[in-house]
Image 1 (cartoon, rainbow, N blue to C red):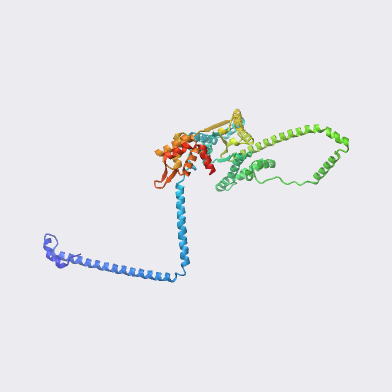
Image 2: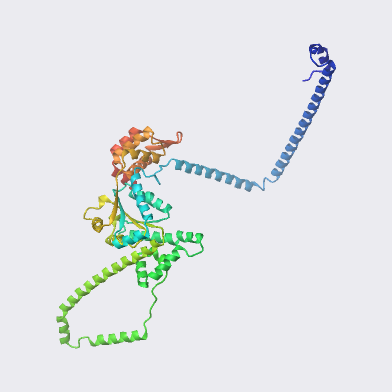
Length: 498
């Protein structure tokens, strides 16, 4: 607070050494008092204004409360509806939180990386690059020499043959502009050519959908599917198209809609049929002697049956050869219009003779450009006398280049990062290493069995997610005793029973 002027003047002696005089000091004190009074007046005005606004707010609140009270009866249903909305939103939020928690507390065993397969991936992709570098002259030389090439990936069940091909080759092929199409045999559905037909169906679907869209976006000309369909229509006759439709029903849209026309009998055909019926009636035995002569000629009819069966066998082989030729011509038209095609036929241990013969004919046909055939099978289910083993030896004798890739179980060095990725933890963690070593010792390093053991531990609450530390926790002693007392087969049986 500023001192009054009467108090300040008697003390001017203290400032005698100051450059200020008594009059100057007096004027300064007066100015300070003026400023102080102005400041007090401003504060009073602000205080009065604040009080006014507070009174106004209270008045408005009282008015609103009065208005709401008058409408309370009419808005009761709206209030209940609003309360229901709030409750529903709260329950939905709880469900979302539960889903988030459940997603966090799940093993990450889907779409995993390939551990310990770097060399195999490099080999597969090198074969794809070789297919890319093929020139027209190279394809002509291959056609003259009739030397083909294919890749065979083998290994026991659960080692990751399909994952290696799909992730190591399929994804890379798709990024490079190739079409990757696969088919898989089923042990419960032993249907001839089923896997090859599925692969061709996926190939045709890609051409008629994805490539069609790309063609429309790039230019206003005809799409790739239209070009291929027109070439098929010009190359094949109706009988070939119908045969391909029967063998590859999933390619019907790509093959076109042209079908056999319905032929009605002409008057000349009716007259010929009537004449044939009349001659057959006259050829019937008219007496007992004629009937006996027919009986004595029964042995000759048996010989005729044998000849007819032989001719039907030859006709069947000829039909199979025509089918092989039609499929090869179809692949030649398709592959010549695309950058490259990779066909995967999986689970060849359950393949049929028709598929093996067809694959052999395709591989030996050097006129099909930019086509890579890949097969996968379980080596423990293909002994030396298996039809697949016989066909492999036959192809090797025909100088066909077969790149063989054998997939083994993982070593403990690769089992540790596999378990760490499934748990979402660091592979340098000592507990993760201990758990991975224990699982590897029991399963032998089979990737599928290792992941099934982890899932079994999670299902039986021996492996739990701790939200406090945000990671998986387990008791090494309990897990070790669990794994030691149960084998791989029992765990898989329990999983399938559930």
